[in-house]
Every structure is written in structure tokens, then in C-alpha cells.
Image (cartoon, rainbow, N blue to C red; front, side, top):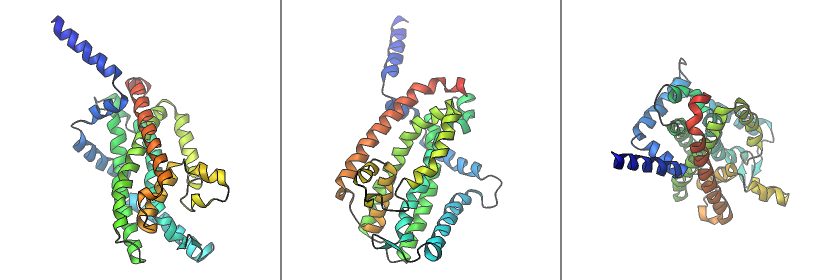
Length: 285
């Protein structure tokens, strides 16, 4: 009996000092199928009662793209080029990445509060909430990227070996913003002010990121270097490299090193913050 008690206390002590990332991996063990099913359910629940259902997750961004296409094709400086490409063609790969990133930040920060029944009423690993929320947006991202790819092929781009880099950039982007949600979601659950702060900065974040323009062509040197630290810039231009510029990921050594460092920092900080706050979430909610 004494031996069993000692082993139990030792296991609890070990879990107390294990890294947050290891804790999250433990919570995901044997839950992968459940996460996939919850991701599908989350999409259906979001658009419940609508005739198109989850199809609105695709229709809404496509309508946004149509507005931008019409504006730049017939209204604002029609025929203008960026880096030798028509403006809308230049924007579309970045928009494909942005729609996922913006949802990952916004919905990822709200997911615990919106799914608090899993935290309060069920014995459910909280980190899985962030996973199925972002995975549901990833399913939409696959569809939008496929539509973008068809458009690029119709305009004379695509069917290149460089396109395979999507299978590097997409998982990296998903894991980066998943790690970010590990920190944002618990803090937003503690404070609605923090959640509202995230909502208020999203428009500014869009315009401060290189979705509509080339961030690495800004004439002010220190701003150009500062924008390299923005991960949204990296992924927006990474999609352009894969689908438009036809450049390999290692050609931008500086950007690659910066994003890898940021990736490690975000996963480390996010998992630590999650482990620090997860046990008191039921009391807060």
C-alpha cells in the first residue's frame, strides 16, 4: 500500500514538472478521431439553420474576394501591377492564407468560452477544444486553397513542383496558430476585455500585414526589417512563393530562421501558459 502511494505521488510530481507541450500531447492521445468529428460538428453548428449550412464558410470569403477583384479590376487603379503581377493575382495566395490565420486568431481566442460546456460539465481535455476549432477552419482552408489553385491554373500559373511546398507551409502555419491559441484562449476566457482587444486589432493587423501589398518592398528600411518579424507576412509571402513566384523556401534564409525561432517561442510559451491556467478554467467559466 505504501509502495502504491509512493508511485502515485511520484507520478503526480512528475506531471507537475513536465513541460506544457508534453501535457498537451498527453491530452491528445487517443482523441484524434474525436477531434476530427468535433471539427465537423463545429462547422455545422456555426451555420446551423442556414440553407447552405457549412457552405457559408466558403461563400463568405469568396464573396470578399469577388469585391476585391471588382474593385481593382474596374475601380481602383485598374490594370496596376505588383512585382510584375496583376494586383488581384498577387493578392489571392495571401488571402488564402489570411482567411485561415484571421479565423485561427479570432475563433481560436474565443473557443474555450464558446465551448465552455466541455470544460464545466464534461471531463474533456481543454487543449482539444483549440485543436478541433482550428481543424474545422483548416478544412475550409483546404477548399479555398483548392479554388485558388484552379483560378491560378486558369490564369496560366500552377502545375509546378514549387506548389508542393504547400504541404510544408500549411502544417507549419496550422501548428503556429494552434500554439498561439493555447495562450490566447485561456486568457480570453479569463477576461472579455482581452477577447475584445483581439477583435479590435484584427483590422489593423490585416493592413499592417502584406496581404494587399509587398511588405518587403516598403521604402523605409527599418519598417521593412520590422515587418519581417510579423509571422502573417511570412505565411502570406510563403504562399506566393509556392503558387506565384515559384521560389523554394530556403531561398529566403532570413525569413525562414525568423519564423522557426518564432515557432519555437510560440509553442513553448503557449503550452506553458495553457498548463498554467487550465486547472482554474472551470471555476472562471
